Each structure stands twice: as structure tokens, then as C-alpha cells.
Length: 391
Image (tube, rainbow, N blue to C red; front, side, top):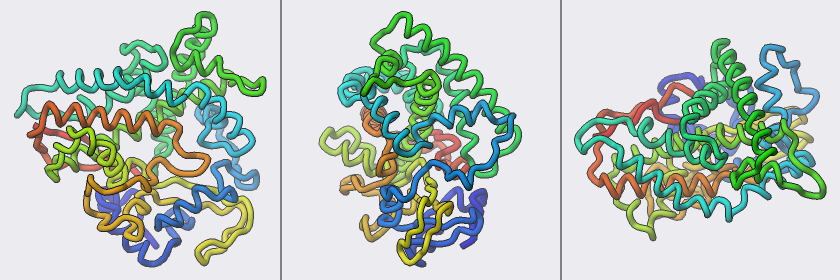
């Protein structure tokens, strides 16, 4: 199958293509990427959970990293997202000792208050405003800053660094994007290195202090691991939450179902359907580590496979009428947070942020309308709006 990930028509609406491919089978060959792509829910779930596949690049497929890009890839080398057992097991265990359900639950009042304050600062009803800038972007970055004990005044820096680094994962990245990512990697690492020293000298009750103190079987996180972990929490958590909120709010306004966000009983299911219907990340790759046959295709060591999360979330064998936004459905099988050992550690936090933002927005502004048709940013494999102008 051929479809350029930079094709504007595909970026604006990839779902008809996913449907066409899924009709061909669980796995198809994506010519533009030069790899097999999993299109069905069952195939994506299998590949995400099968330990014969993973994120770490096999030695035979590892390419020398250009020296100019080493500041970025030095961070990637210690990222939870790019490791497999036993390194992944150790690192995830230490992170979860700090990133506990109790820690996340304690953030609830702060997140609710922040969402309400951001909504209260919106211009009067009828005045156009971009909700990405006014609500969707500031909410997750200010939550992360609060968790780290970083003042709100540094949120602009955190956002700039995050946006630049995330550019490295986009299709069709340019030399300018790479240079920006390297500069951001250096600046972000230096900022966090200083912050780590400050917290080591005077620990607080913030997440970074807890990560520094986390210990398991005599093991602690190294400085490089601390830096990579915090950057991952911001880059992955922020980018995904911004896009989920933007896509979800646009859909709720377009379908006239925003009132459901005001119902505490309906809000959890609504949040899952927002995550399923138009997810923020559409493609996640895996490497094959051993010869294996799945769904009629024989994988060989070193093969790469694309797990199409956006296609899996629209599989009619798992979700009835998948193109329909149905906030009353049970959408817990959605794969927007991944699956297996790489299931997103920040999923509980993301769910809390999404629910708080939707509740605050539609409680205060039940009659929101779209001021202009929303368009998706020209990027893939992320899937998020360029702007969300409402009135």
C-alpha cells in the first residue's frame, strides 16, 4: 500500500485509508515506510504485548549517530520508551515508586482548580479564542511544572524545548528541525541538571525529589536517567494531552454533546471515547527480535512493524460503528496509551487532566461554537489540530 504520511489529504483524515487497509487484512505492507503495518485492533494489541517485539533497536540495525545529533540521542538512550528488559524493568520500577497512584490522586484538586482558572480567563462568550493556546497547551505543562516544583514562569521554556524535541519524531523532519531539537536538548538537560542538584541539596515533596529518592534493591536513578525521565514525562505527556483535548473538544462541539462532560457519572466513559475516537498518536513502531509468524506474515529479526493505533481504535470488530463518536459506549479497549510493558505510565494523570478540562470548559461554556473549521497540523504520526478557534 502506498500513502505518503505527508499527503495533506491523509493528514486531515487518515481513517478512510485505515479502513481500506484493514479490509485487506490484519497486516499490510506500507510502501512509504518500507515496513509492515498492523491495521486491526487484535494485531496491534498482539504486537504491543508480544515480547518477541520491542522498542530497543537491534544491534545489527543500529546506525552510527551523527555527532551533531548526540545531545538528543544521549537523552533517548536512557528513555524508558526506548528500552527493553532488564534495563526497562529496573527503570520503570524505580519511576513507579515515585509516580504512584496516590501521588497522582493528590493532584486532583490542583488540576481541577487550574482548569477552572484557565476557563475563567477566557474572553466573554461570542469572542473568538484559540482554545489550544488558552486551555489545551497551558494545562498539562503547568501540571508538570507544579509536579516538579518549577515556577510557572519557566513553562514557556518547557513548552519550547518540548515542541522542538518532539519534531524529531515527525515524518519529513528537516535539518532545521534537527538543529532546533539539539539546541533544546542541551538547554533542557542543563536546566534539569541544575534542578537535580538543587533538589539533592534540599529535597522537597515534588516529583523530582521523589524520583531522586526512589530506590529498589539498592538501585537508584542516575543523573542521565533522571533527566531522560523528566523529559519523557513532559514530551510524551504534554504533546499527547494537548492533542487529545483539542481533538476531543472539537468533536464535542461539532456533535453537540458537551453537556455529557458536566455529568460525573458520564465523564469517565466520555474521556475514554475521546481517547478512542480521534487519538493524538497514530503510529508506534516495534522491532522484531526473533523469527515469528503472525497473521500470515513471517517476521525476521531486524524487521520493523508499524502499529497503527488510530486504525486499531476504529476497528469495527472491536467497536460498533467506530466512526461514530458515542460517548456512552465502553471504549476501555482503546489503545491510545499503548499496551504491554510500554503502556503509558502517565495514563492516570492524562485521564485526570482530560476529564478536568472538559468538565470545567463545558460547565462554564455550554454553548460554545466553532469559530472556524478546525484543521489538523501537517504532521504525522502525531494527530492534532493547528488551532481550535471557538466563540
